[in-house]
Image (tube, rainbow, N blue to C red; front, side, top):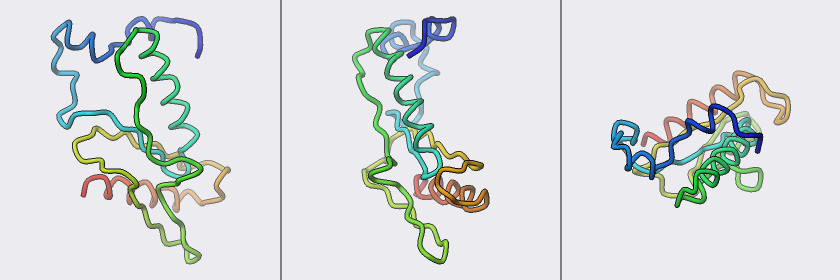
Length: 128
């Protein structure tokens, strides 16, 4: 984690939110969830690590933010005919999901169109 800067000073933990009474910052659906599509797994893990570092720095009671979609357990399967099939490994109802997908990246070998299609399908799966 980088050195403290203006942004980390302004970071609001859930406890800060309760203390200062800014109920508008709470999501309408509850708990926070990070979802990494196949092209955004590294980005999701980096954001998760930084977010958890900020929580620890501010002595939050929340130690870990759940992440669905890792290199070991990807959220989307790509079939030989390039059909995509997202499957959620966990129950996500009641969460505020943040989806990470890099549409133009070279690590997975998928085209921009395939990455965008995967992103759309994952978002649709999360809404169901």
